[in-house]
Amino acid sequence: MSSFSDHSGKDAVHTQGHPEYASGPRGNAHSVSYTKEVTSDDVLAVRQRALAEIDNAKFGWFHVKACLVAGVGFFTDSYDIFAINLCSLIMGYVYYANAEGDAKNTTPTNIDMWIKGATQLGCIFGQFIFGYLSDRLGRKRIYGVELIIIIVCTLGGSFAGNTARGLSVYWVLFIWRFVLGIGIGGDYPVSAIITSEFATTKNRGAMIAAVFAMQGFGIVAAAIVAIIVLAAFKGAVDGDQQTLDYVWRIIMGLGVVPGLIALYFRLTIPETPRYTLDIEQNVHQAARDIKTTIGKSTDDDTESAPLQRPAAENKVQKPTWTEFYHHFKKWKNFRVLMGTSVTWFALDVAFYGVNLNSSIILQAIGFSGSGTPYHQLLKTSAGNIILNLLGTLPGYWVTVFTIDRLGRRTIQFIGFVALLILFCILGFAYHQILDKSVAGFVVLITLAQFFQNFGPNTTTFIIPAEAFPTRFRSTCHGISAASGKIGAVIAQLGFFQLKNRGGKNAFIPHLIQIFALFMLIGLVFTWFVPETKGKSLEELNEESENDD
Image 1 (cartoon, rainbow, N blue to C red):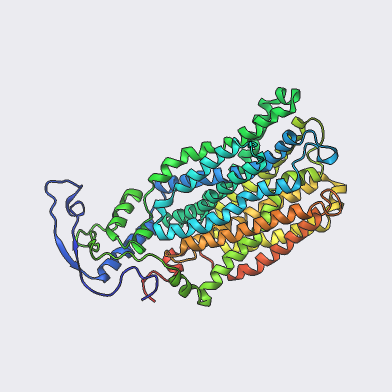
Image 2: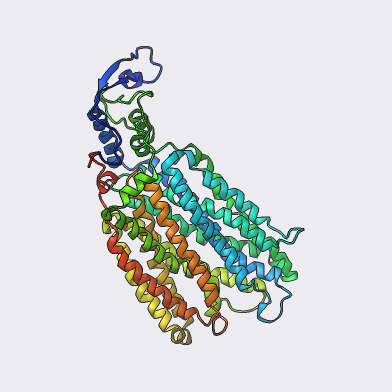
């Protein structure tokens, strides 16, 4: 038997029938109970029919709801991650208004690095921890916990201040954002896996991509909210620059609104039928969940629909690290995990290197302009909106509408090749392009953002949600995502340590060249990633027959 087997042996088991399957709804006076002796083959047959119902179901309201519930979380995640890009800029005008020279109105490099990197550090822990717990305890039991952490820490960060014993507002904010990162990190594997395991085979790529694409709306929303709040405080800011202290807190605090909307639905979403079938081994409960979610029973035959091991004999086989080791010591399995992890790592070095520092890049190319603090911040926010509306959002949604036709690997190859070319042009011809046209440089950066999202930023999120067995699917997604966040932290540390080498922002061209090198690494390791288009999760992981 496979290490991922859901039922052991061919022994007959006695199974209590369920009246609601035999003769109508629960509580029907004419319902009768019966006992039936069934074999593991019978249970396996019902399991296969149950999975077929999920894989071949008509796309309906439940699928839309699942995407929205998971997607609102990603909207919140990206809003919180990228709002700090603008908030840090604003905080410089508040806490360093009296600094001298170039330091005036600017958050110091090391502080800026750590408050931006805190969330990425937290994400690494959250992705590992929640990825494992989702396999160990179940998707439903922990779904919503990560959102509670996000809500609490977002509010906490927006009220950060100096302490009586010497902790500055920046250190307090670092602590809040580190814990916030744990919640955001937890959202990656759990939302991806829940969406994947509820999705139909035909639309699975589009559903997971749509969830992830909500990041684009979150990034744009952060910049739009910044403009609205700045406009509301324009008179006050022009009169007193310190009024900006309210602005960054409001921008950050508003990130809780979508999370509060989604929380109830996350806490009440049912367990995925695949986890119920493969880990809890409760065929009957899975059948009920399928019926309530997609509106179908797994079998109209009352003789087979109620199959379930009795509680006394139902042995839940939780995944173990020993089992994980034995599975991934095989090269054919390890190469997939290596491929998903390294490609995500390589992508995130460039993705977060560019996106978390887009305000700095806009300043470096002269797009933020000069003038009052209000006008400088307004133009920087507008620049972020332009970059994301023209590049980020279209990239996400082109992927949503093409991924189940083109395939995951194809889009990932296209993205890495395009990014390699674009970063080489931007890095090696940086000054030549800027001397001729700032707008031309912005167009190239926008194209890079398009191909990040119509490319590896989306596919590296989707493939790990499909390419691994149910028992380890969430753990492996967490490992892959955490590898990406390690790349994000390296990018953040490297960007801030190196960007001013040789003068203010003088090293940025060389950093873009380094990003090109990582795109080449991602391109090479994409060869180890499987194409998952058009295959059921069981076909991808050789679980369809439940044996070796």
